[in-house]
Amino acid sequence: MGLTPIALLFTLFNLPILIAQWIGVLNLRRKREGASWILMLTGTIIGSLTPLLPILRLILSGLSVRIPNLGEWFIFLPAMVGILGSMLFFVGFAMHALRISRGNDRAAELEQLAAAMAQEIDRLKAERGTP
Image 1 (cartoon, rainbow, N blue to C red):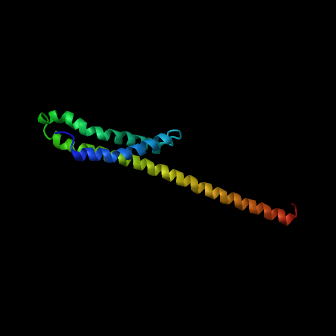
Image 2: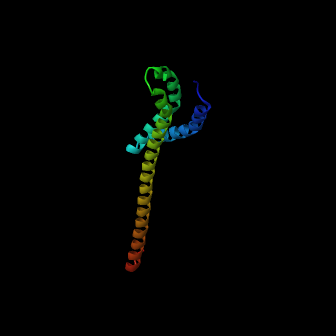
């Protein structure tokens, strides 16, 4: 029972995704914006361990003789762990995106307020006749 072609394909498919996740997490490490960064980091670490689980399954396959149903249950473990890692990363990513969106909305509001105040100052200067 070696590494199946499907497991190899799964690993090769996830490799670019993991690289992109690591690049994003490492670029955000300076900001460390609370729970969103921690969730993204945790999901990326879990996702990075996922390709190692089929190898662990091979190592533990000898135990399946002694422990009933271990082999059947362990077949689905890499997929479950991979999904958990992806879910954690994407929840953190969504939280980070919401924070950025709120910041951009607030900056736009402040720019509008500053423009309105400048127009009001210009109007008051025009009424007084001062340059």
